[in-house]
Image 1 (cartoon, one colour):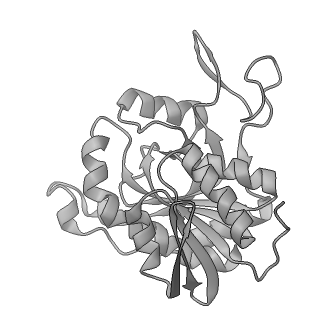
Image 2: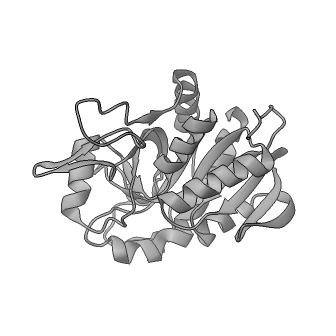
Length: 263
């Protein structure tokens, strides 16, 4: 049984990959490392607040298991997913950061000839009752995050990471609230990118956040997902991702540092 956390409990942060965790670890103090069922977990403080950071591995199952383990082992007061994602919104660029106000598992549902009909994860994916398949933040937390997001000023992307022909505006990094969709695929397709943006009105796609949101809903814990765009989920994403993942991962960590006070 997982006890109800108190305000002094640590905040749990889940990162899928080493690069994402390293970016956050570099900002922490008073570090202590433990092993939790094969996962390297770092306990420490971020600007005076207790946090515990784990590298979960990639995918919905890996991240959900890690979230549940952290909640049980440390009695965490909330769950955060921090790292990179693929951009879906044509108005966003590599280096921009999306804070999720809503999360959807884009690969859960009923697959018909006309496409996939989304259902609430955990319910039978058939019949007329689809359930509420979006995991959303409270209105109060959404409003506070929106106010903070508009005030965050991230460092510009280094010029050598972008094509020589790229306009200077591409170096400027935005922080926005939006919908993030999660599924167990690396999206490397212009057609699928356009479909996910159209069908879900989503700004970014990744492989963990909505699964952690499902765990949070079961445990009664708030879940915030912060994603910096490492690629644009199109035909070049297999090239952009390895090029940008280490360079943009600190963006998500810096945004988390700015918002941790309200989580």
